[in-house]
Image (tube, rainbow, N blue to C red; front, top):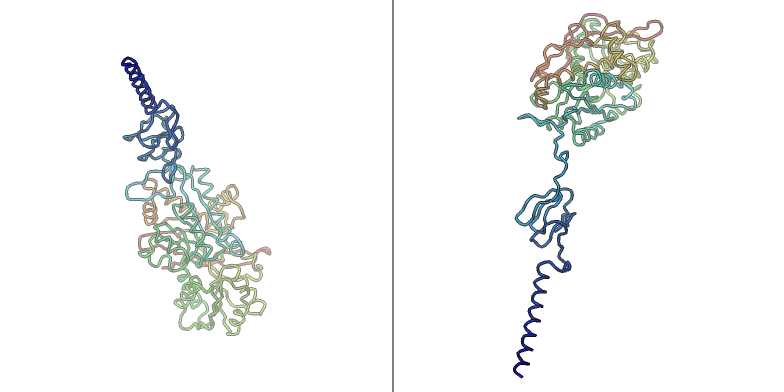
Length: 483
């Protein structure tokens, strides 16, 4: 009996030992994956609660992809960073995922809009409707010259210039939307050739607050250059409307002493500057008998012209853009009123003769600072070749303005290559001294300083004439200084 008891006891001990060994084997990973706990296959296992596999399993609320971020409970596999609980075994990622694409910014400057291969510029510019048709040559001239230097000179500073113009339809709200896209989405380095006083007025404060260069504004509003300290990032290129109005006043008093004067003007900064300048330039012997304004949304201005005629004025000034200037002159002719018309330089292009007939326009005076598209001049010939090969549209006085703006952009960017930042660009702009394009009249230069942001300051009168049945502008008189 004792022997039987001893045999039974040995059998119980052996069974217990086998059960214990089975439990140890399971604990050491010898069994199947337990529910709720993931085990690693092919890679060492993490000691936390979740082990990494070929594609890491998300933990918490964020899933790791591509280059997963290590957490306290998950091991990284795609591009692992070693932690106390995870072993690094995955292949490193391709080198191109870490290569920088932008030029490193110089100390103290910004390079948004600058890459290794591009300089990004943009503009709000009317490209549809009457305004788009009137000023399309300016944009064509600028774009053609940018295309030319990209193709023929390899761009500037070893980079191509990437230029985008967004149609704002000559509307302030459209300009605001255009600038939002250009700055926030396209990340432009600088804004250039913004067209129209009302449209540009809606966005220039924003550009100055953001520290974005706002160059060669295609509007002669007095305020662009009036206070460079408060608006250090904006620089004009066109002459000041206030000074143009002053020239018109002085010319009237010298050539029509004692005669009555009337004016029609666009009811914004453009027209108001023209009106203020006219009053400044007129001698007291010349009475300003009628001041008529119109809105940029106006369809018809014949009633204003009728009011001007009824005053008996013999000199009429038009602070208007081409469509309205032509409408004013045609309405006066239809009324049998033949004053001496003085119209702003924004009308000094052959396009005017498509809005009003050469016969209607004959004798009208305006101002300009550039060589005309009709000149037999090497620089004008080259301009026509550039426009033909790299642009579109017919050459004209306005396309020449566009190219001159392009040349200025090339000049200041080229002077900034060793400090290609917005601050460096403005330093180059404010270092311009007596710059003269081959396309400007002799003696017409541009100098920009930190307290003078006005572009052209000298101009000459143009008179509309009919030659062989066609309308042409011809210079007369001496160069006149705005200062």
